Length: 150
Image (tube, rainbow, N blue to C red; front, top):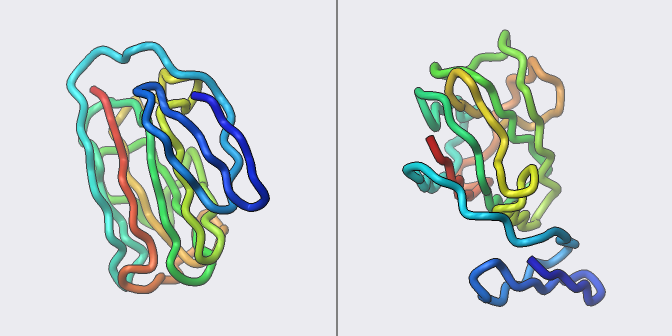
């Protein structure tokens, strides 16, 4: 992947030669090697809850995500588990989403190998960063896409 930044806008070309533009994000990295295995793509639209959701009930790698926050800042929490997470669980990754922005995390997570989840992959989206936060976000506040490989 090749990236350039112009003011608040990053323009980049992905590994397939497709041009993209992301406002308020600077993207750097390299096109990853092909990842073997069945791929799953999941679209996400938040509800007016903490959005406890299982993305995979089996071991997987998160290869890419693209998340848009259409309101106040919120936090996507990733869990290594095959059941819906609760505030009692500990996330392995917390991704902050600032207000009214788009965050493309293309296939460059860990150099294209993705982030490994041994037990499965679940998420919650809350209004505050604390691991045990139960602050619900708004319906449609977060729109997203996740790409996984078994």
